[in-house]
Amino acid sequence: MLVDTSDKQPFYIQIRNSLRQKIENGDWKEGDLIPSEKELALSYGVSRVTIRTAISALVSEQYLTRRAGYGTTVLKNKSSLSNFTLIQSFTNEMNEMGLPSKTLNAHLKLIQADKNLASIFKINEGDPLYNLQRARGAQIPILFSDTYLLPIVEIPNTQEFLMGSLYQYLSSKKIYFSMFEEYISAVIAPKSIKLILQIHDDSPQLKRKRYSYDENNRLLEYTETYYNSANYEYRTRIFYRRK
Image 1 (tube, rainbow, N blue to C red):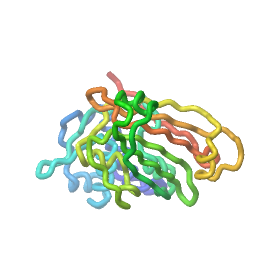
Image 2 (image 1 turned 60 degrees about the horizontal axis):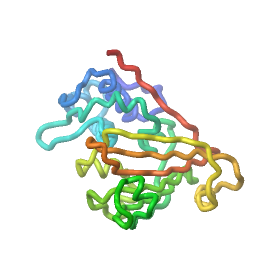
Image 3 (image 1 turned 90 degrees about the vertical axis):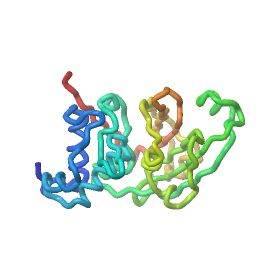
Image 4 (image 1 turned 120 degrees about the horizontal axis):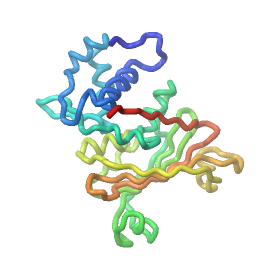
């Protein structure tokens, strides 16, 4: 089960994909304790640091969970998430394509829900919501995301959080999603978005709306994301699981 040294993907990506497939295939089931970092390092022929990085990626994607003094277990069977698109983080998408990625700029503020947001979240107008706006890419911006979150946990307005992974932070606070809804369309981006993404014409851009729900079917997150279609290629991976 050694990593493929001829593969251009980083070792931790190869290992993350391998471990994720074990979960998708049902080899590891919900609640199963996975092998230790030492055992996995020997199995794949890599360092424990590489294994730890792969596991951290799966923790942020909510496939695994760590418990101090106990080990790492399968959080829940993720086969159902195979029916969704773009579920993995932008960072992981870029890594799989062998491209660097980073947050170019980000802003977080606490706002009051307007009529539209109140309707989306089924809350009252004026109720508080976090609004996180981020432009992400490599040397140039590739996407702009406008995220709204119920304030069920305090979100720090720090550089570390703004430049890091939102889902990884939420999972560290024991906040997990059980269902995603996504709607993808081709649109003419608003002028403000064109300016951020350095778009100079009226060519259609990819727009994604994501609704993220907890186990009680409560909407926790709503995000609108615009992708610069000249610099982004839509990709999805579908797993088939035998019953």
